[in-house]
Length: 79
Image 1 (spheres, rainbow, N blue to C red):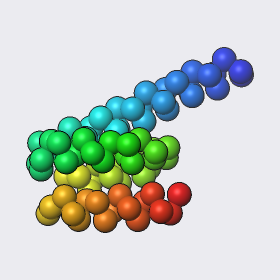
Image 2: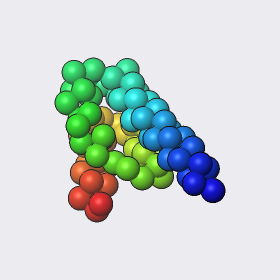
Image 3: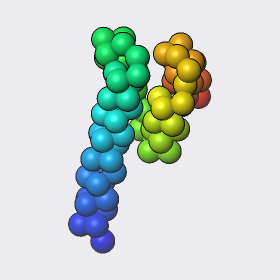
């Protein structure tokens, strides 16, 4: 049982890191890569995988970087 919780922890940690990198990659492709990079410290504070999924959708759908930042701000203020 203890071993499975350790495995789950590292699996979630890997998914979280992959989610962060995916969000940053999409922002960098759609908008300014250097501006996306400035958001990295804030995005890295998000622990919840569901929130990262929402951010990923926002990175794909937001019409501009300011709209994405609003989503990010509302998410980080709600944590």
